[in-house]
Image (cartoon, rainbow, N blue to C red; front, top):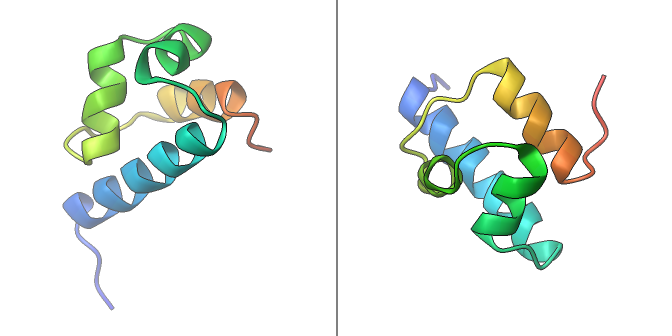
Length: 68
């Protein structure tokens, strides 16, 4: 199966949104914890934003997701 960048963005955004909701965090609280703009968090959740590794790292740390 071939995935497009859009597919990956949507999948990643859904996973971030699910984890955020599991932790009962608003977009604003996650943005503050990750030190990124709330609008950016919204775009990630909708799958409309490509995420750099540094932003993915910040999100993983803020969402307490184990990372390498």
